[in-house]
Structure formats: structure tokens, C-alpha cells
Amino acid sequence: MSSRGSASERDQSGSYASDTSVSWSIVTPPGAAGAIAIIELRSPEAGALEIALHELGLAPLPVGTVKLRPLLGIDTGLVARWTQHVCHLMPHGGLGVLRTLSQALVDRGIPLADAAEFPEASSPMEARMLRALARAASPLAIDLLLDQPRRWATGAGDDPGLNRILSRLMDPPLIVALGPPNIGKSTLINTLSGRIVSIVADEPGTTRDHIGVWLNLGGLVVRYLDTPGLREASDPIERRARDIALAAARRADLLLLMGDAGSPPPDPIPGCPVLRLALRSDLGTPSWSHDLAVSAARGHNMAGLADLIRETLVPAGAIADPRPWRFWAEPATV
Image (cartoon, rainbow, N blue to C red; front, side, top):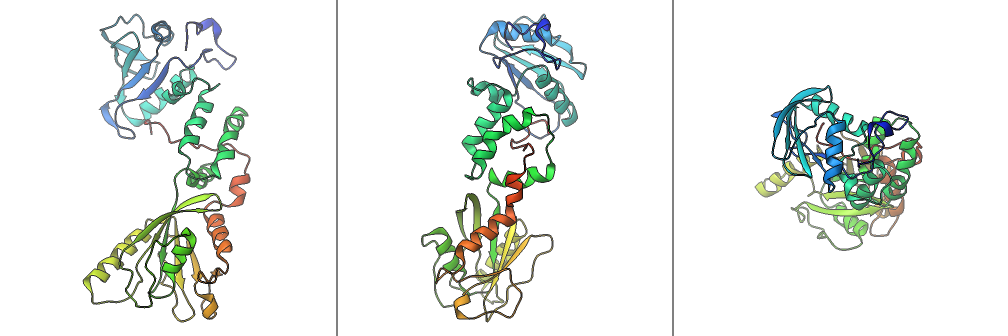
């Protein structure tokens, strides 16, 4: 909001015509309700902040004063003008109040603070997109992010289910590999990562530690956790490793349940998405039902495995969906 942002310059939607010189952020802990919250209004231009306060019904408010004011017809709270450039609104700290106030500020042409970090952005949505590009984990996110300002400008609504799926492009999903010992799990992770990250041996119980790597599976970056082979053992270290593996599996976005021709995979964990993989397919075909058979040692079906994991976590249909994507983390109002 600038000195041009007078009430006579509202756009057709009823918002004030504005630039991004005034922005807001929530400086109390994000996502946590409390007795009082703090919303900061900030501008490098003292005059712009002055006009913003007037248009929000909060003026007069000289520097160094604290006043009790109605806050946009939503709540009543303290308003403190600390400097020419910074003012704090202090409403009640309920999440509903914060959510409504935040949206009211956006509706009046005052963007979330990240827009102020990108003066080249033509809108708050474009600023959000630029910020997201900097932290997107997966290359598959890039083209989708670049198109989001256009999609949101159409007025189309987003879909919560689609948002959840596509969020995996921003924050890598967790894949946990479970299976009995000595079936080739370590060879598989070494092959997928293109380097040796796990010890390979024929002795059951060789791998006692959890091995975690980030993998790029055809544009989708995932966190891949290889766990020690699951078996009944008297060794307390192995028992502890088994408990840790099962606890990690319960938090997974996808479980890879693995076996080979001689050893079936473990049972699925209720509520966890599962792929059943037959390893060491060059040594025989298993009799148990599986989604894919692979041989890491021979390189058989490794590309197919990457495709299957990617399609399970982020289907091609979700990538191609033309609807807007709520790709940003909600501000501290929720």
C-alpha cells in the first residue's frame, strides 16, 4: 500500500489499489493459539504506513503510542506504533480471529510479508510463487509453480486432496523399506542412489543401522529409509533396531515391503500405503503376490521401480490437473 492507495482508488473487487510497500506478518508462534497475538505491519515508507493505518481505521496513531482500537470490525485489541515504519496489531490470539484478520488485510490490498521480499513480483501470489521456487525439493514442482499465479487469477478453486498430493513436491515424502534380512535391500538402496551407502554382505544382521538418503526418482525427490532386516533375534541391538524400524514405518508416506523368492515380505501396517517388491528376481520368481519384481544387481526393472514409486506418491494425473494448487504453507493463522 502506498500513498496512492486512497479509498477513491479501490479496484473493482473493493480492495485498495496498492503496491507491496506495506506488508503484514504474524510474529507470535505460528499455529499456536494464545491470549494475545501480534500482527506486524511494516513498510520502508513511513508515509505509506500512515495511509494504511488511516484506511484501516486505526489512525491517528503517533509513534510511541498504544491505543485500544476496533480491528477491521473483527475484534478489538491494542495497536502500538513503534516507529515510522512498524506497527503492531494485538488482537485476541484465537486461531479463528487471526485467520479472519489476516484475510481481511489481504482483501484490503496488504500482502503477506513475503511479497515485500520480491519487489519484482506483480502480485502477492507471484511473490509466494517465487519464494516457493527457492525451497521446492522436486524438479517436478518447477513448471507447476510457475503457472500458479495464472491459475489463481482465474478464480478457480483448489482441491484439498490435490493439495496434499502435490505438497510432496515441496517437502520430500518418506519412504521406508521393510523386509527380512539378506534379500538384497542394501544392494537396492546402493543402486537407487548411485553410490555405496549401505554395507552389502551375505550374513544376516550385517546391517543394524538405519540408512537414510535423498533420492531423485524421475523428478520426485524422496527421503528413503532403509531399515535393518526384520527377524526374531536375541541380540538386544537387533531387537531395538527392529522396534525403531517399525516406528518409522508407521510415519511413512509409502512402505516398500520387500522379499525374494525364498523369503516373503512382512505383513503390511494398517493405514500405511504399500508397494510389495520382489527383490533378486534374477534368482527366481516368488510365489507371493507382488507389485513389481526387480534385480538391483542386474539393473532389471530399476527404472520401472522409480516410475512406480513416483506414480504412487504423485500420480501423473495430479501433475496434469489444471486446477490451482495451494502450494504455500498456511500463515501462522492456522
